[in-house]
Image (tube, rainbow, N blue to C red; front, side, top):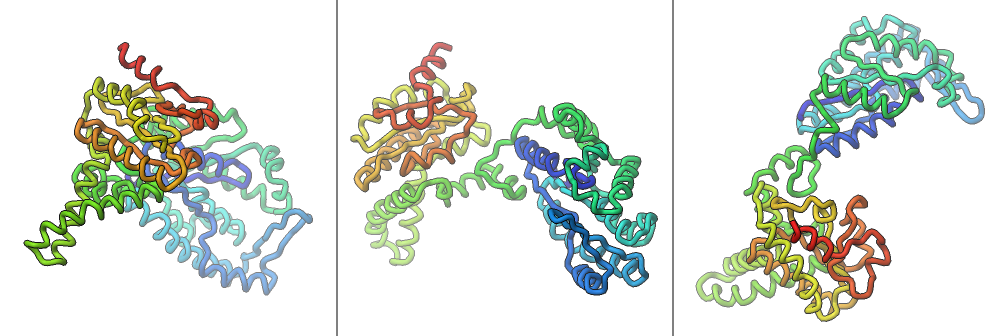
Length: 447
């Protein structure tokens, strides 16, 4: 949803950042590429004015020993004109980098503080309650005109004072809060209080977002794409099956694989490339033969040691569910053929969630025992399983881990792991949520 932006404004202690973090989390969960943007003090040129004001006494500080508050007295003509002008220049520069470019790239932007906060800061600092209607005020406000939703978070004064005791040091605290509450009368500004039940507040906000921005967070399903990329442009690219396959052919999951599996993949490329080079070097020059043999070997390795069918499933392809379950049922017997090199084999994903279907892949991890010989045997066993899966068109998403401590970044805390092979209970000792493979297989065979 390119161009969507949500500005969250409000006085200190009102609960803006808490709400912003939840919005970003829920939007990301719903499949949107979301950026959180802090937009209160975009200072570059204004540092010069603030430095001069500090030296000349136009900026004063109040402290109670624990907190310190800066108070600007910019009502004098040089500051009253120069300060807003420089703030405008700084805001435009910050806007281009933090807002315009990410928006063009397709990000959904959630602002923690927005143009409205800057307008209030300047109105207070210059002692000009009509600043919103000045030339600089209107130019600043025009930057916020394309914001999809502006949310004003407020709370009763006694609540705000309790949350931010340093506010009593600022003589303009109540005037600042009054300005914020005036914004609630503006068209397009949604006002909410953080001094109510959080669930009620969130539900009301969800309803507002659904009406205003056409976003139903609870009903929006996560958009699944191949590869965990955040840049929206790349997310669109990898939805194309040819780009998807080309990307997988090039990298073959190197960003996810462990160093042990990366090195094994490199060694296999060399092993496959050498005989191919010997054969075609009689027909082609050495440079051409070298390049061509590496490409052919890499493609062969990709087909038999990759996860092609698991990648293609992102295009909507369906698979034979009975054949996939049979493949899982025979895994435990096959694991004994790994000659003791494997500590455990676990599965997760849709199998763990009870959602395994014709469109699912099989998320599996092999955890090998330490040692060079075990590294060779375990990765060779992984190569064997991937080759079988490739020939039988089974969407196997398999990686070989160098140790049991690496499993955490692969398994979601909400998905209890399914134990396929764990002869010494090594995995079961670190995670008590395990489900035996036989139990899962029987569940699907009895359907």
